[in-house]
Image (cartoon, rainbow, N blue to C red):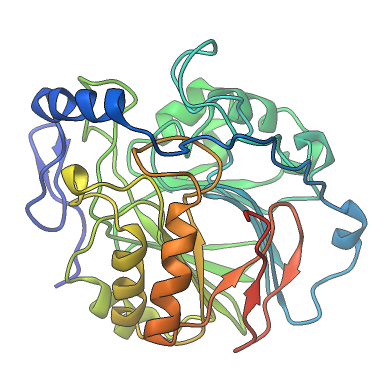
Length: 335
């Protein structure tokens, strides 16, 4: 049964028993990295991708429009509200600027060119979902100056440290909700099976969440990071059906299968959530975070979706794209 998050001492617990890789996993992974021959980073430059900012001068005709900036960073326009999700414009998803996973392509839209944002939504504190340089910049620009920052329990302190005013931050526990954008949108935090921590030794001390965006006419499920668990069906039954279901497909491996879905897991989760509307793959195509080839998650998802009769919604990075009910979008920019 879906419930608020529980803690054991200072650490939050997953909704089901979960194994997260420790030093033993690192020792197993290291030889795999050394022997790996997959194209984990693109051999040829990607892009450039450019967002046509004039598009934002007009509200979406359908009421729902999404701009995928790569990985899990999105700008969602839903029923009159504009939500920036897990913004990472940083060059690297890393605690240091000179090493670590480097982005495959430049951000399609400079932060200084963002349209007015009502909400900045941060699912958890990992570097590929919460970029320090990005947050510091966002906290200073006019288009975000009146935004409500919504995040999981404990993450607000990190945002405050990076320059966000404390009075603008709202932290949610699982199943808690918040009305934003003058009542135009309800945001509901729901459980995921993952973990948190920006260092090896502070894991689980802040919460990780997925979110439901509920407008007057549309519902969107942002799955953030998660492994498979049996709560998807209850989330779908309680908050669905969803017009657009965003689920992670990249950075997966059997060694950390409890905390990431992969393409097959994402398709299974989509079905459990109700299998209605469109499925959007996220968490792929921007950073080298695993052993698989960089194209492999989307290639495999296309195969699985064809087998399972799932309607995919895969726009190219940076292109503001209308979400029309039951109309699939299949950009193959990655080929």
